[in-house]
Length: 134
Image (cartoon, rainbow, N blue to C red; front, side, top):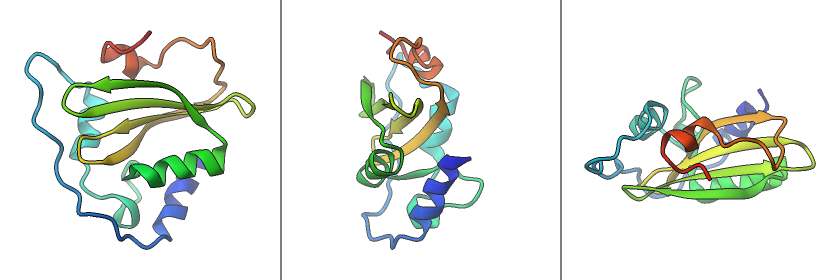
């Protein structure tokens, strides 16, 4: 529920970033998990988000919100073929975590989030599904 507050706050911001372009073509031999493919298809970001959309905005906006509003920081990063990336943000003090998917077009989307994060937690299923779990 609290992550929806991020979207509400961002909706109040003026949108002056570059136009969103579609991500790069799929990489042969690599299949992106369905949840991330759905985020690739989302065309609205920032102030143009619909209530049913996942929270997506330009990378710097998402990063600032997670750092300032939730005191989270990047604890794991993994590149994905096609110019994409997954970042796991977490706050050890608050126990919150956010999985951020960076698309090839410079847009970052919240792929998942939750509470109860601990440094010894097993890898997120999306990171494991992409072969990025350590």
